[in-house]
Length: 197
Image (spheres, rainbow, N blue to C red):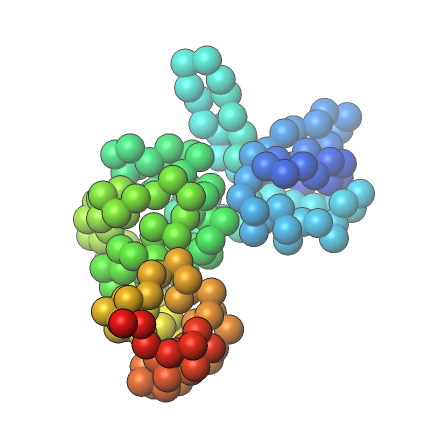
């Protein structure tokens, strides 16, 4: 119904922002990454892409910086048990291309880093969306170009050594994803103090 908004960013809160268009303020719920990105644009003209979520007792407008966020939001909320709140929690941790890559590589563990996402839900997301992602025109490009592939392998290896994905991911995020998996593991272990018994 409302495809996009172009207006002044008049307000920015912890979980939403307001775009003023022709005297009307549109409240758009969003994720932490998007809100952080908009922080420097307060009081300025912005253009955001939106999706309207209609429930029995509420009409919620969600706003993002680009169309790919909207499409990814639609896909995530199409999964059984995944509502807008969970989708935003996932966006707060990962960008859409990272989400698509995780699904293609069956990376269930990374999804559990998002608030409210347990292993069962993470597996459902991968299972229900993998075939849909494969049909996207850029799916092969995602698989080939993501250095996160090596990082995902490193996370799996470090979990065997007793570390959790939640504590390993922030460490690996600071490292060069194009480095060999073995080097990523070595550097991560060095930063975290070695192998656990």
